[in-house]
Image (cartoon, rainbow, N blue to C red; front, top):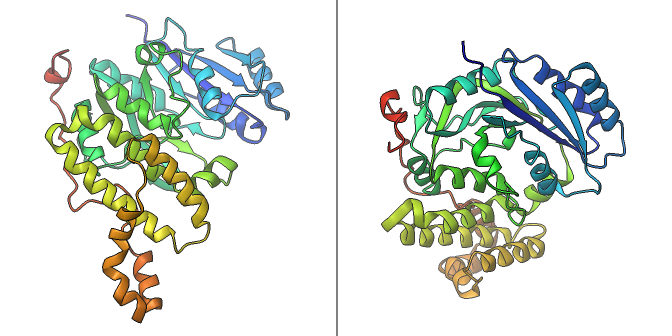
Length: 347
């Protein structure tokens, strides 16, 4: 029998001693055993390095790589991706505070092997105490990449999650020195769009990964500024022309309307100045400089009413659609591609 494909598992860690052992144990417990595991220690000052080295001494499939300087989050993850073996068929990242269910690698690899056109494999995820990434209707298991991207850019399902929730075909990871664009706060999503321009998306209808929900500097920053709003608009502008065709211009206008409604809402919320500064910069970088006229166009229709009913207006502003994905229609996701079709390079 042919040997099963090699999976390169990578974990970047910075001061993650509290949960690192649980993360490593979940890899060791996998029902699929043809893997190698690289733990990238990003200048940790706690016991992370000692924990990683202890496991490496116990299992020859585990090695430890230490950076020579402290990297930011994206830089650390890119360093981890650069450790993927040239012999690996697949790459699986698992963040140091996350872990994998026992059959994660086996089920994801099985799907990838059954469908050679698949570049990314996802599955349901346990995010804290909630199961999410449930955007693909059963029994859809393989979806054409551009069709899924189109659906998501039009406001459709959320199926990517963080890198911990996905399995990548290793050839796509090795192509770029920096797998994640370090200028993009939501580069993990952008990387998926990049792959789906030429590959399909596979989905296993099982809960296969766990993401730990806890407060942190990165998540606090993203939550406070609602960075995902800018990220989704940036990705629409970057990937929309390739995925939406004639729908692109109308979708951008629609997204801008919702973006400005979001900003109007934030003007009457705490931290308005910081939020507005962040999103003005984000719009500029996306090629759509902020315009006060556009913001006023959202607010003015309510001005006369606002003068007479300020409290009610405040309540209404807080109920305005505040995300770029809010759309009057959500396109359906394509159903499963028959295996005979999904296996063809030209499908």
